[in-house]
Every structure is written in C-alpha cells, then in structure tokens.
Amino acid sequence: MPPRSYATLTPAGRRFALFAIAIGGFGIGTSEFISMGLLPDIARSLLAPFYAQNPDAATAKAGIAVSAYAAGVVIGAPVLSLLSVTMSRPKLIIGLGIGLLFGTLLSASMPTFELTVIARFLAGLPHGAFFGVAALLAADVMGPGNQGKGIALALSGLTVANLAGVPLLTAFGQSLGWRTAYQLVAGIFALTVVLLLIALPPQAPPRGRSIRDELSAFRSKRLWMVLVIDSVGFLSMFAVFGYIADISTSVAGMQPAHVPLILACAGLGMTIGNIVGGHLADWSFRRSPLLVFPFFVASLFLLIPLASFPVGLAVGIVVLMGLNACIHPSLQAWLMDSAGESVTLGAALHHGAFNIANSLGVAAGGIVVAAGFGFRAPIILAAGLGVFGWAITALGLTLDRRRRPHGDVSPSRPIKPAAAPTVV
Image 1: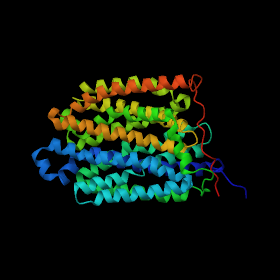
Image 2: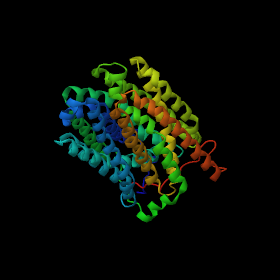
Image 3: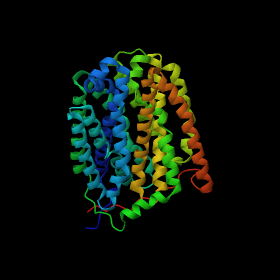
Image 4: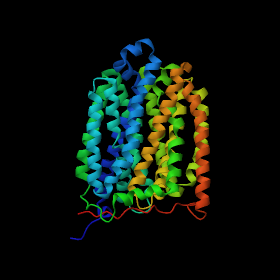
C-alpha cells in the first residue's frame, strides 16, 4: 500500500489524535502554573523555619522553584528539539511525554527545597520541545492553511489547564498537600503517553537534515529579534501571575480557599484569548501582536486599582490573561516562519523564550516583595514592564517590516512546513 499522510485519517481518528496532543498540553499547563498557586504551601513545607519568621520573604524564595522550571524549559526547548532530525515526530513526542512524567514524579518526592528545585528544572526540560512538536503534529492533522489554528490547538491544553486543572489541583494541594497535586499531574502525563501511543500512526524518521542544518536557523537576525520580543514582552504578566495566590489574599482580601477561583478566571481568559489568537495568527502573525499589545498594557494599569476588590481582581485577571494568550499563537507562528527549514526548532523556541519571561518576571516580582513593598508592588512593576515590552514589540515589528517590505501585511502566507510526514 502507498504511504498515508495524516490527512487520510478518518475524522474520528483526527479528533482523537488532536485530543491526545491537547491532553499533553493540559498536563504541562497544570504542571507549570500549579506551582504559582501553591507557593505559600511549598514555602510552609520546605522552608518552615524561614516561613515562621517572614512568610512573605519565604514565599518569594519559594518562587525559585518556578524559575527553575522555566530555566529547564529555556535549555530543553532548543536542545531536545534537535532530536527532530533523527526521530519521527510521534516517537519524539512520546519520549518527551515520558520525560515529563518522570520529572513530575521527582518533583513530588524530593525531601528538601534544594532537591525540589532541581527536580522542577528537570521537569521543565521536555516542555518546550513537546509543545513545538505538538504544534507541528496538530498542523499536520488539521491540514494546510491552518498553522495558526494548529498552534492554538496545541496550546489549548495549556489554557484549559488554567481554566480547570490548575484551580482543581490547587484546591487539592491546599487540602491534601502540594506533593499530592504533583502526583496527580504525573497521572495526567501517564495518560498522555498512553493516548499518544494509540492515536498517532507510526511515521518514518526524517532524512536529509543534520543537527548543523537545524542550528543554521540561529543565523537569522529575524529569529533573534522575535526571540527578544517573546522573552522581554511578557515579563509583566509573570511578575503578576507568579504571585497571584498572595495578591488574592493580601491585596484583594480573599480567603486562601478562594484562590482557585482566581486561577480559574485566568484560565477562562487564556482559553478565550487562545481561540481568538489562532484566528489572528492565520490572518497576520506580524500585525496581530501590534494590534493586541496596547490593550494588554492597558489591562495591566487597570489591574492596579481593580486588585483591591475580589470581583475587580477576577475581571482584571480574565482580561489580562486573555489578551496575553491572544498574542502567543502569532509569536510562535512568526518564530516558525523565521526559522526557515528548522521549523521544529522555531516552534520549540517560543516556549523557551516565554519561560525566560517566566523566570525573569517571577524573579522581578520577588525582588519587590522581598524588599518589603508588599504584594501590590508586583502589579505596579508589571505595568512599567508592560510599557517596555510594548516598545520592544513595536520596534521589532518596524525592523521586520523594513526587511520585508512586501511581506506579511495582510493574511499571513503559509508557514513552510518541514518535510511532509509519511505514515508507515
């Protein structure tokens, strides 16, 4: 029989494959963001003497675990994506799922704070490469002309995780212990591996490209420019979201048991924004960030007064996270386009750059908290960082337009895929 492509899958088969990919994103989103809601619990458990003396400073120190996970993503995204030159996409994404499973199990079992930080770093290593391969697999399954929607589909698991998984497991973590929450996330990754094994047809390994060929993408000035936008533009969001549990209790005056509701609001905004962002990316992955970013910055400034009230904080978080999520499919599509033939590397780099913002944003928020300015300070800092990110984005888009005067200014041209997958 002749080789089959993903386009020949039955409609049910395509839906099942997309579901399996999204479940993996759901696990990653839950793993990444649940730490932020459980920082006080982690600090109370692993930094008990310090927490008894200074709870705010201990919670800020616990943010190192978030930064360690982000550092793992930053390093793992480009390094592990290089495996795409020797492994088929289905085999690679299953291997990355196994890595996520074991990294999360280690996070749940380490006895000290220092070892937990190392485990979080290891858990983050497969994150970016998994999402990069997932975006390409989703685009393969959905067919030509749907790159932006494929990226959004791969990210949908992450956004739904923030709508449902993070709030629920944060509540479990508060009542049953943060280790239990991580164990449940490990269960999601085990399910992901099983579903991917069933849903994805086997595929021949790639031929004709080497690691050197893949790394040639780094010669592109456009690629570096988009990486800077991706890394710097979203420091502001993480400066706020990294301390959302304490902002909810200390600034809005909410009870700890109500923190999952705020996390669900964040997930709602992210889910809506991701859907809109997928369509905007297929419209124009260059113009849409410039269209959305001013509203994103405005939402940061509005959050400063709104955060004093529970309802205001909930509304502000929905808007902030929705506008943030709206931009990401375009940035990942832009990176994939800038990477040329190294499309897997480009897709993974978005998540590495995003987690540079994660690490630096949480660290910046922790500095102002540890300095004694309280948990309103990260919001004020984020507003200033948002203006800076807007300026960097506008500058990058201007430079890109000068280099490509007849480029993507209306509906975006299709992103050139890697060699068409062959199912065997």
